[in-house]
Length: 171
Image 1 (tube, rainbow, N blue to C red):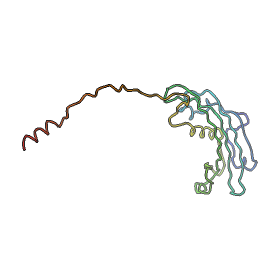
Image 2 (cartoon, helix red, strand yellow):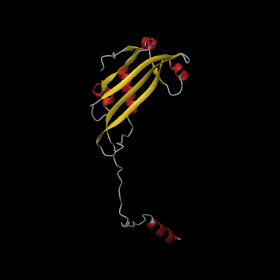
Image 3 (cartoon, rainbow, N blue to C red):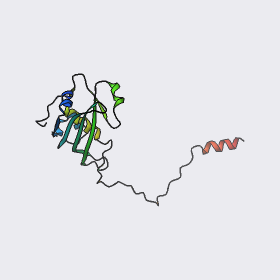
């Protein structure tokens, strides 16, 4: 973890002080994210800026993240680096009712009255959301199967043909 980023912040004090943090976090330190990765080699560059929108009376944290996540391509089953570049404004709220007042595109973060915020976990959460459901290396080629056109399809007898014959015979 970057020396300038404490493990726990008081978000309300950071908003008042308009604090800004930037640094680098190792992927190996993100235990929840590692489950979705092939390995934990690499690091994450981040910027975190706290502020208050005077017009909307909204406290927020702007988060910018850049990383290359090592994923397994589901087409080739090989390791590839998935580039992630995120820029997200997160609204700091203390009650779920405040969520509806947030502008469109602003994601809520529910905090307690003490304003305790774990910044490294916040970065990790955003990276977890950035992992594609089905990771595919864009440089891989699509696998196609070619079926020979001259294969004859074997006709199988209809299992109900005998019943149709019996029915026709009884009439």
